[in-house]
Amino acid sequence: MKDHAATAVGLSRWRAPQGIQTTTQDGTRRMAGAAKLVYDGQELELPIIEGTENERAIDIGKLRGTTGLITVDEGFVNTGSCKSGVTFLDGEQGILRYRGYPIEDLAEKSTFLEVAYLLIYGELPTKEQYEDFQHSITVHTMIHEDLKRLYDGYPKDSHPMSILSSMIVTLSGYYTDSSDPLIPMHREISMARLLAKTPTIAAYSYKKSIGQPFVYPRNNLSYIGNFMNMMFSVPATDYEVDPVIERALDTLLILHADHEQNCSTSTVRLVGSSRANLYATIASGVCALWGPLHGGANQAVIEMLSRVHEDGGDAKKYIELAKDKNSTFRLMGFGHRVYKNFDPRARIIKKACDDVLKKMGVHDPLLEIAKKLEEAALEDEYFVERKLYPNVDFYSGIIYRAIGIPTDMFTVMFALGRMPGWIAQWKEMIENPGTRIGRPRQVYNGATERRYQDIGKR
Image 1 (spheres, rainbow, N blue to C red):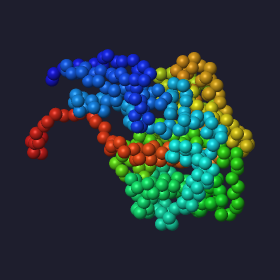
Image 2: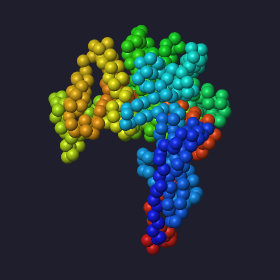
Image 3: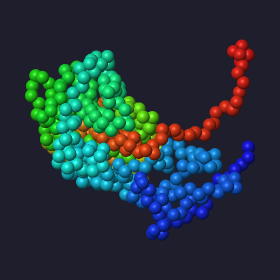
Image 4: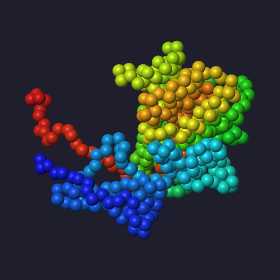
């Protein structure tokens, strides 16, 4: 095979002089310079584009058609799969913004439903817009009575994520009159139904697991208050939603509402690019989130803290084990795939965690161990050098545990929070006229051509 060398040379200055750049229709800027690829005597200029937050990328859209080459990037860690205006994340600086609004401001001042509106429609709503949006969610919280019967087919110990994903995709069978993603009215009603019914589906999966009757939604409660009532109330007694717990849970869902092009969001975009209906598309995101390397991190934190507690609660012992290359122990909830600095969500959730435990009078030994682990890690040179700071998962599980949400429901709570982000990313993609069906390439490394032999000759 002929040995070809491909090299990138003549890389121009990333920032072109002012006035020598153009802004495209999607808001990105095409720079004056280009990266040059030299391959087999052929020179190809690859345009450089820049986003509104100065993120720069090499556009390789014409690479294969011109040279026959593709790029290989396992895990897509260096590949921009799309251009998006939903969420900005700077892992080096510890910055997270939804539609330009810092997560700190939204967590302190906004509500989950208002953030959902912001993510989906791009702007914070006016009072009238918010009331209309809230009403459109409230009137769709009930699920079809026939759909409730499907819960009877699941074993009592079924994981709630299996129920959530299958129930969401089943919604497409009940709303066949509004399943075309290219029709604006179909999109609107499907988005409202999905946001409204997901908490009901989730709460019913919990009730199924503990053998209690389903609780119908109540239109006089808030989005979070209604979910808590469906989760924890029983016909035999009145249930009152605690405002401190309600606010903490609302904040948690805001923090999880979107996080750029992660595994589940990328899955939603890929499946949605085939023009599958919204319910099928979002169900695929739920399944991706179910993986322990993605949505199961807060559950892993609780399991880790329980292990430390059962072994006497010696935080320093486990800090040393975490540094030992020969140890199988992993310090869960520290560091992040994207954040190379402190996770901005962790600071917010730590306060919410303190507020909930103080209000409930809970003295959770796992929280004390968590604090000791955090203090020890932040003072240890090993963790400081590697910038292994606590992330949002480190505290979220403790809040869920204190509220009374069981461990196997933690990932379901993650899905509830991520729902508006998935919807927003899907909506942005489906409304973009330049969207094409996702079709990654590969470098084949299997057997070359072989001849079939009859079974007796093998």
